[in-house]
Image (cartoon, rainbow, N blue to C red):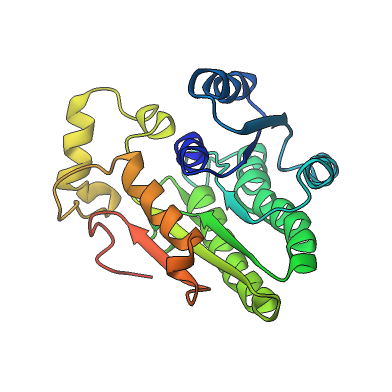
Length: 243
């Protein structure tokens, strides 16, 4: 998901800077720069480590002089019932999905405040508002990052900084496909999984990454200049409009 948003921003003329802990993703970013002649840069950092984050954000600011937009897209998914979920899985999920959003947003906002403008979008999940079996850590971490972003939006409003959320449902991504063993799993997700208390997807299809990307780009743009602390759920109606 993060890569698709990153690429879309670069294509639209942004100087796009990506931060990732996965070396292959960094190579992919650099490959795009060479192939498509886009203005992009990539840095290795673990968003759960505030020291690493602060060092990278300071470096980006020194190189480019300003940071205009931020997309919090890092995420991990651990499955397991609460009674069997390990402490390590719980803590890692929150370290990336929640603390990562806090660390990067805090570092960037301190720069954006100087320019009295900026737009931040956190990619959460429709699982933040509807309970799921075997997904307590993921649901809770995404709910926390969602509310954090709304609180951040309230604090930053007087500085002209907007903070919004995009919450995808089932989307055809690398992370999602790791939990699909065959095409039947996709169809099952569309139709619903009663034993997990999951309704189906009324629009009868899995989202493409472009569906999520377009929502993010809208919230970052001047077309959304009077929108802040809002959550756009892009899930084909799967959560029945629950917020």
